[in-house]
Image (tube, rainbow, N blue to C red; front, side):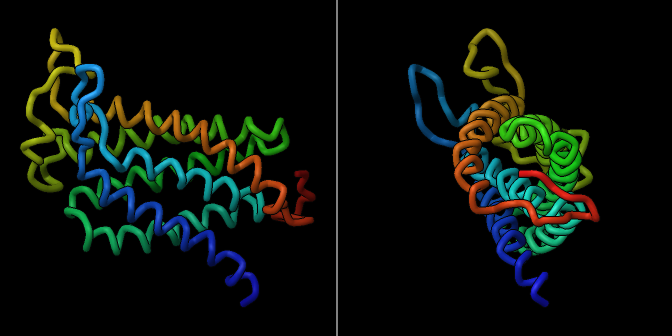
Length: 215
């Protein structure tokens, strides 16, 4: 029971982040900066999702890869269940699939790098995870080849200047994916700041999966 209580804050944080991301990804940022229509580039979900990697990495640091995978799976089940109430089924399926694969990959990479310099494991694992998550989510959520999951969002598939470049056009969701990835990488890098602060508090257990862990 004590072990479950110690994992509960990480599971709750994961569920909150994913639910918020699933909901916010449906809303483009309607603003124009330097002639660029941000609605063609970003959704609000891009700013929320990278926090999930922070939660996963802190769980991994504290309890090890086995527990981190369990927290990812439990958080995934809770988040996807609730996401069906807040987003379309297609968005929920796409988000759940991308989340599960990307987060489990993050756990594996972090675990391999955990004994290197403090910033390498969270940075490299979140970068790779963000690439995989973006590719899976946006293709499943909006691409025509995945219409069996649900109808296309007409706004998402309408043609628009690719990354704001008038000479190139592509479905709007492609620009969203590239813009989303850029934001995820930027926010993921910024998340090194709270990670660096929190590792003084969230310290590894003396033994994780039978092996002594180093900070």
